[in-house]
Length: 82
Image 1 (cartoon, one colour):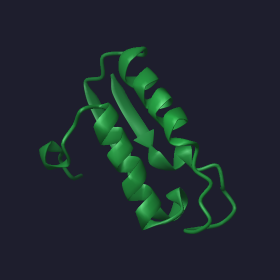
Image 2 (cartoon, one colour; image 1 turned 180 degrees about the horizontal axis):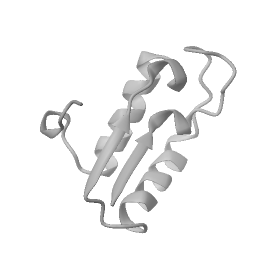
Image 3 (cartoon, one colour; image 1 turned 180 degrees about the vertical axis):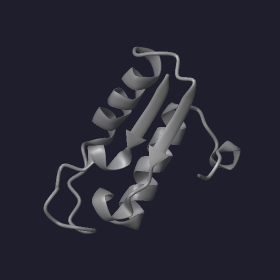
Image 4 (cartoon, helix red, strand yellow; image 1 turned 135 degrees about the horizontal axis):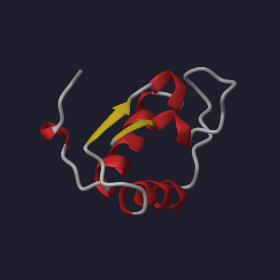
């Protein structure tokens, strides 16, 4: 099973490209990520799409990535670039 996660899912502003993000509250993001981790499947592989333009910018994308890494207890240096 592969989890293919697009971080821009957590940005609810689809109109402004690369700006004016409207991110879900941190607790809501953490809850959704935790549900993906613990209540769905045992993932064989996880891919994460980093799309700063659609996350609201570089800062927002990095914030979302760090939340993902924290919830899934992962380290960026252990990942593989595709």
